[in-house]
Amino acid sequence: MADRRDANLGYFNRAAAAAHPDRAAIVDLSRSPAAEIAHGELDARMERVAAALAGRGLSSGDRVLLAMANRFEFVETFFGAMRAGLVPVPLNIRLGADTIRFVVEDSGCKAAVISPGAHPGIEAIAEEARLAPRIATAPAPPGWEDYEAALAEAHPGGFVPPEIAPRQVAFLPYTSGSTGRPKGVLLAHDGMLWAIRSSQRHWPAAPEDRALIAGPLYHKNAMRVSVKPKLHVGASVAILPRFEPRSFLQALSDRRCTEAGGVPAMYRMMLAEQDLVESLDFSALKMLEMGSAVVGAELIAAVEAAFGANVIEAYGLTEGGGPLRETMDGRPAPRGSCGLAAPEVGVRLMSERGEEPDEGELWVRSPAVLAGYNNRPDLDAERIRDGWLRTGDLFRRDAEGFFYFQGRTDDQFSCGGENINPKEVELLLVQHPDVIDAVVAPVPHALKDLAPAALVTLRPDRKVDEAALKAFTLKHGPAYAHPRRIFAVDELPVGGTGKIDRKAVRDRLLALIADGSAS
Image (cartoon, rainbow, N blue to C red):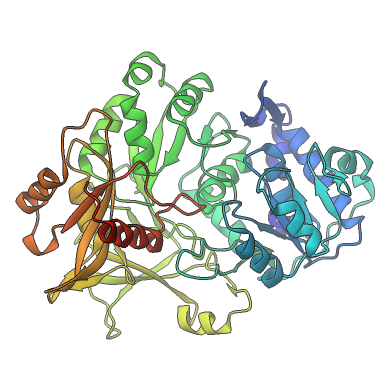
């Protein structure tokens, strides 16, 4: 007789917990001293979460708001809720209060588990929505149940996990919403389990591995790339509360991490901490992952030289998992490539005319593709065609089958009749030695209708100015694509997932231009 736990994503770590009960699973660096949770203890606490929530009247399919900063309780609540058949809604805690209210209402949340202070308005929002039960890590606000007390009182021995139907929703993340209201993404137990097992089959993790996480746990990168594959096999993750270059480097060394990931700007900031890069021991490192923004060949070479580890350019999406992966035969991917189509994944490049050229929008089909968008049949019809997900991402494929990210379909614009992809200009700007990061957006132009402009972050000791950067882009790229204005800023506008918020970028550019600011 089949064990119903085998079909439940919440039990993805069950075999590892039985095989490696005393091996570290999570090293939580958000507190001092760091908290270390072993696999056996983590599994038991997940079961207590399930029993505690089920014992408070919640039923399979009910949605539970999960609003926490980076801490081990996030992981055990996320998967523990699934064990009870509940659907956690991992909240982007950087969203505004009105947007969070929308997420709570749109998802139909009934209960909430939070860490106080994760968001300044989260307690009031949960109370306004009359979510119940309301559980909080210490110090629990008045009227909220204490998290540890709830787990201590739970009786997991009497808990029986529910049956999980095919394509039953496991969890409900919401996209960043930089172009409008966030969209709820319905992700199924069977699809997510398939992705974990497929990854382990083709790119196996080992119990000795340890991944360092500084990005938000509510985002796909942390869960898909690190938490799920590592805890599935008895390996471990070290969790930082946020990214800060010196603490990241120190943790990478002190905790003997074998891998880590981040956006290019993170690596540029780490390389600037030359004293730590040269003095710390990174000999445990096997691989560093880089993605979610423009990646330059020079940066990759510098990172590989500094850390003595291979850099992989990654691509993934909430709605479709990781359809492009590194080779399985050890061949390095060409610089600029996100890899080959993953085994057992259908991949197409489609033109606007429905043709399949070697450059176009990426379409993906696999069990990991979302079951649908929450309350958005219009998006289902627009984005999902016969099981194929239209990603909205533009790629080029070379003769060897390697894929190269070109940008988003909705980011392209025409400048005097020439189509410009912001990524191409951004990639050019970050080649300048004084530039840490760059983002490009279209702004109105008297002759061209629209023309590129850029925000850049610069190294502290930079000598470059706007004129010099313009000259650099004109020398190394097509004249029509050079940014007509370039502004140096302290930091680039990002959303809660760490990705660039392009609407905010354009608004900032327009404000700087209207103000007559100089770079």
